[in-house]
Structures are given as structure tokens and as C-alpha cells.
Length: 242
Image (cartoon, rainbow, N blue to C red; front, top):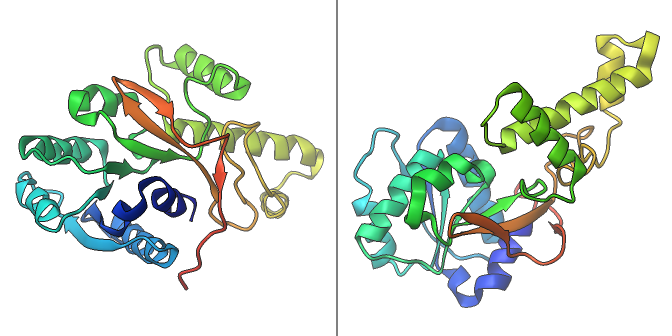
């Protein structure tokens, strides 16, 4: 809900001409359909929704569709290598939407390096602290340990959540002490609410298995990510699509 509302607020009338392109694999397809339903319910105009096969190398026809349909906001779901392929095709056809959006899977230095100039302006919504936030002690601690075990490695969303999950497990295990069993651990985890991994990410409802509702929005400019959403996190109620 938070990102759909941000799109409407930030891009105004252009939000009524939005496209979703996604890599054609089962899990991504399910996520894409959920996004279309929730964004439509929030008031975003989803004018073009299209799967792109994994084996597809020619993205030109999809870009032509974006141009022909007057699409102003493009959201893509897929691995960063395919994101770069799509953005290169957009550049080759002189197509520049008001916004190119993706989820936090491309909040990754490997994407920045591979995309180069075509990545400029890319908008990403993330549920973690920024990697370059020197005031966030937990983010800095994660990166210090990352460099100890794998010098030169870049931080990633997956790494942040793996770090957080480990902290959660250890904290619960210590609290249980001699009562620690698989059953008591599961019971304890069911009671966890608003887990932030010591402020490394937005509150997550671990116990109820409900998606977190808070994000921040960052944009890539000249090889660096900068936050463009106001304040700390944007938090909006989840949109029911049942």
C-alpha cells in the first residue's frame, strides 16, 4: 500500500498510465498479479501488464508497447541482469518514462555497476535502513562482519534479512535458556511483533506472518542511492485483495 500511495502522490496524473513488466516465472507471476490488484485498488492506473520470458533477449517490442500506449510509469519485477537489459532497450529507443521503479532486489552494487548510465534515475522501494547510513549502528555492524568473512563483498537485502533472522533466533534462544526446543522456539516466534533487527529494517510482523507496511524510497543518481521519500519510513495500511 505504501508504494502505490507514493506513486500517486509523487507522479500525479502520470500514475494513471502505469505498466508492470515482469520475468515469467511462477512465483514472480503470482507476486505481479497481487501487485496489480493492490495498486489498482489504491487508485493507480495499470494500463499494461506483461510477462517477459526468461529466454527472451529482444526487449525492443516491449519498449515499443510502452511508447505506443503512452506509459509514464514503468514498474519491473525480475533479476537485476534483466532490469539492465530492459533499460538498455529503453535507452536505444529513446524512451524515458517519468519513473522507472523496481523493488529492493536491485538495491545492490552489482546492479549499479552493470547498469551504468542507463540506471540513472531508477527508483527503488526498500524496507531496510540505507546501506550508507553511518548513523545506523546495526547496519554498520552487519557490514563490518560481512567484510571480515568475505572481504570486498557488497551488502544486500538478502544479507540484511539473514543477519536479522540470526539475531532474532539467538535472542529468542537465549531468552528460552534451558527450555529451548523446536516447539518452544516456534511458540516464542509466534509472539514476535514489530521486529526491526535492532533498527536495521522496518518493523516486520514475524509472529503473524503479515507483510510489513513501511518502506523508504531511494533513487539512483550518478552511481549513488539517495532517499527521495520524506522522513524515515512511509507507512500505509496494507491493501486487502482477498
